Image 1 (tube, rainbow, N blue to C red):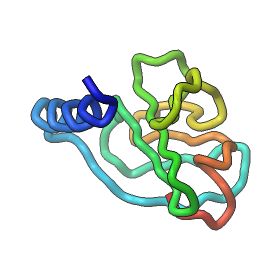
Image 2 (cartoon, rainbow, N blue to C red):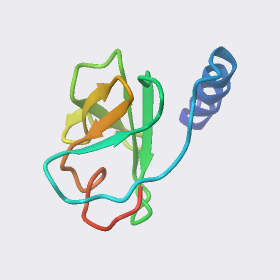
Image 3 (cartoon, one colour):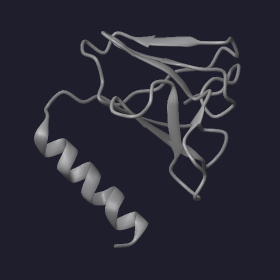
Length: 105
């Protein structure tokens, strides 16, 4: 199965299982962490893509805490993208791919 095919299947499968999903945007602040709140639920999956580059990343609640995986390439999961899944959203870390000052994600 091609990588792109898996992502399409993943999105379709996820959306049919739960009506609790949301999309939106936030602006990075460059701090060590930034809480993204107001979702109304604790997410199971977070996908983030910067408006400044093409690299997106994914983190799931079943991954080791604090780790995320780039959606492109074969890099191993890494830290710095996400800090936690929270009861009303999630908290991103200080990676340029998740929290650069004045960059929209």
